[in-house]
Length: 197
Image (cartoon, rainbow, N blue to C red; front, side):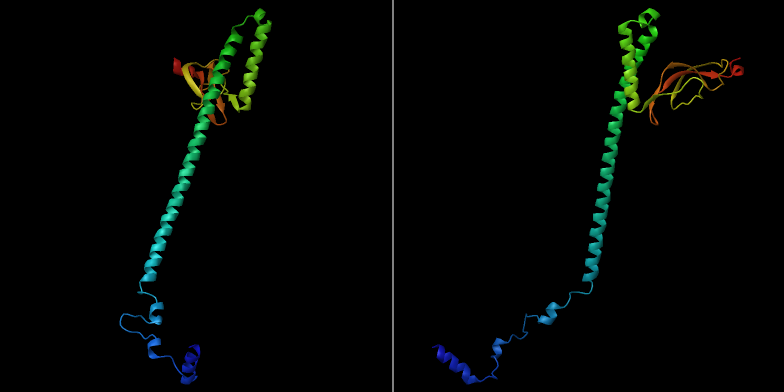
């Protein structure tokens, strides 16, 4: 049988062409290959470019918003940490106030006692701890009144050696940490003698 098929093809000759039905011709409903590979409507690339630009714009806006969210979260975190540290340090300052009041109320005989020396040592250790946290006392007496670090309790006539508008007395010590005030110093401010009379 295979021999019959070979003979049939051999009889047609080497120049034989395939039957017409074997060559696909563009007919009804068929699109020639050249036309199928051709681009679509002329505005398709412009529409695709516009759509790509819109997606890129949305992506850039989303990325910018994410960066803003990250920055806000970091800022909120830093502020929360700073507020917590400030509250802790202010508690430490208030404890130091109590120790310093106790030391100021001691008599000369009491200062020589071992327990009094322990109180003084504890107060000094607290001052050292505050210094490690960059907490320093606000300068008051003789300095110009600064509402950022001083809280005026009252005004008195300027005593000798104190200029008007300067701090004459300190009622409660103030503290700051770097540029931030932990607690304003409560002070008495000198005023001009003429203003008081």
